Image (cartoon, rainbow, N blue to C red; front, side, top):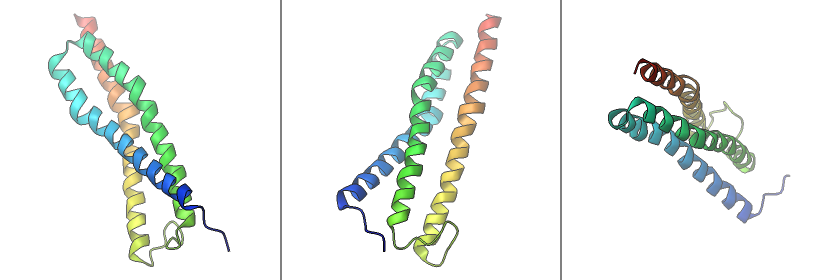
Length: 134
């Protein structure tokens, strides 16, 4: 039988997991709902481009670090939880809820990837075209 980790280690893992979740989702929401619309309405193309590049340079590494931290802390939490049988095993309500959470997490990773490699670069190209036209 595997010895359970100390309570402080599990508490630290839960805290890091929640902190990474809040920071990651906060990055996505702040860029998508707050920063990009406000910048589009108030800044000229040159300043808008500079702002987007500065924000992406700062927030993107944080978001991807948070996703990595979520994966690591989540794997640790699952390994010590007696309710967890396997990734797609849904014998209990708890395991079904965790499976749904993982599926939603995968959708969020896809959303982050689209924002990182599609949306922000498209906005950057559009602003560069506007700047070149002026």
